[in-house]
Image (cartoon, rainbow, N blue to C red):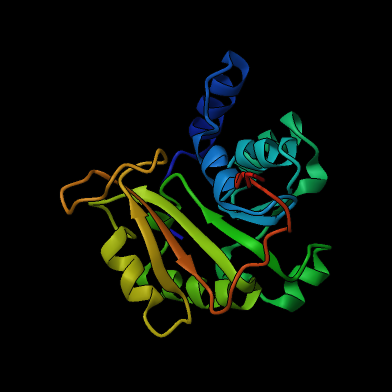
Length: 210
């Protein structure tokens, strides 16, 4: 992880956004839309926990990890502290998840808010490899980040190569806008091998009977 950052200042700023009612759930709506109902979600670099809270409000079983105590203190103050663990992405294994009382397998792994920029290339590659180990068949790894920084789409594609994750979608924002090389922001969806098992029923598909 990169050092020299003002985590206390960042945590205070984000806490104020929550108190002020700022809409910070655009990534939550994205994940909710592309996931099956009642998914298990792990938010890597969860910060103050607003995505975890938003996903739980929509019926998902979401947990967040972050290595930074300053932001986790705020997460525990604003939301249920049992949802969060102090862990780094490179420490994720089935064993460490179990030891921390977390599920070992997930339908969705999320990294949003420039989390990849905090990781070295080796750490990012290791995180993608760990992501495969944690995902159900056909599970998705969703990454939202600024394009022109460390950990952007080019670095993500390098990290995904050989990991078992395949890039299936890339957008320029959380609203599904098309991605171009000059897009300042990116939302990338990588998929594990296999197919996702969505619940039977309409789920948005309306069948007309004549």
